[in-house]
Image 1 (cartoon, rainbow, N blue to C red):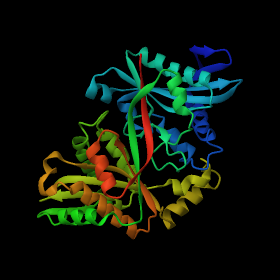
Image 2 (image 1 turned 90 degrees about the vertical axis):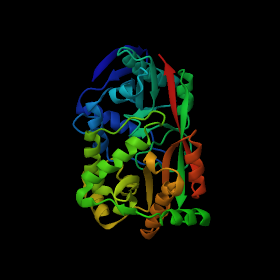
Image 3 (image 1 turned 30 degrees about the vertical axis):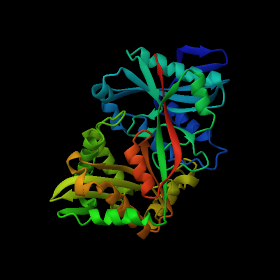
Image 4 (image 1 turned 60 degrees about the vertical axis):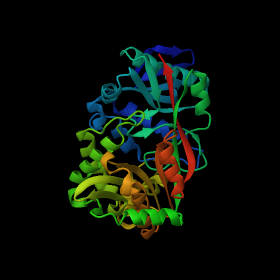
Length: 384
């Protein structure tokens, strides 16, 4: 592991991660920091390690990153990534770099040195602002949990330590925006919401179908194409690239349930989509990040013979031409249909989101369907 010489301070040393062994140490610390937290959920270490490599993550086709760990007396006490996303810069032109994968012991020196390393790395590449956490992208794991620590994290959502927010503030970071997580239960949505959703379903020419697993690549392309149009004006938006869509199609084919992934068409034209994923943390929570020697067998058995009882609504989008008028409730129709399908699978609850705190229309719609705002994730930023 190579030492990052410009970021050392007495008892705390920051080192740049090099090689697979170093990366796995980086990954394992992200799990170890939650040893006493019963609500933390994680994927197996090897899956997370692959996410950190160009071979395993197509984000690197348009992004560049460096991982760092903090050591004290030879022991890892913190970690962080620094990254630049060329798709973000192309989209926004704001000279913003990013940090992610932030985990630290409750120590201001450790956190400040980690953040300073990420700042220096971004500044050296011409960035004038740093924002995060994003691991690595706004389309991957986003935000720092600031409310809702008493609930387990869902698939592709972060957990956190309650002191993290103070560590960032003490290092000079300010809030950029909050992201909301919403919780659904198996109780039926309000009757008025169901009636509106059913009325939209009677629109002439409207059909809603599940994703066709035999052509998952094509259908995932449709979903991402709708997403890229529907979300293009949202804060921090970065489009999914073709390579990312291809990688997602391969991953989702292993875990997706067709009835949780819906495509709405109007007279045969793709108009909207809703994508929910089963919460695979239910399969992996007790593996402690390990697949060997018996973790593989347990995971494969569970994937084949059991279904998670919770899920996460990951994406929902409606093309602009199909918003308003008689189709104004199309997103509600998809939410209700997903809920009903999930009930048939025997689900007990699920997270929807995230949503932006200032997206009043969407947040009011979430509450209208019976969802509860139960978590808040915060994006921080700092001028360089």
